[in-house]
Length: 170
Image (cartoon, rainbow, N blue to C red):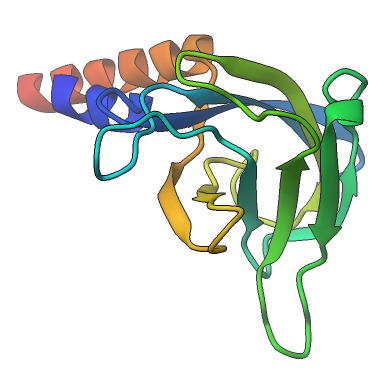
């Protein structure tokens, strides 16, 4: 179980995007993201700034994406959403590009926010795939899955522990 929590928690990763999900009502939700540059470096070990990132919203699970980021950080970032595409069955996306120096190693920027309609069968939305983009080459320099805020992660871990314990005693 510790290995699962370390993997899901993003320990050992170069970047991490933590989310908090809030229900707005009538099938509408909002995710608020904290973007962390833990130890992002190039092949020579030089620190890299996070200057652009994209969070993907799975086709068929999300609709009507809207930027809800307050200021700050909104005035320091250029943000766009791409709606999930019905004809192409393409995922939607939220993309943010810095208007300043970016997120340095050991730094975090909090408060990026996107609201959406949740179409999934589960009670609430979960993790999403993200990519950190190099502004010069437009290549993905890091990627991973968003992780729930620590309190949610702790509850998930506790639930898994109880489930495992109950399974062993059966």
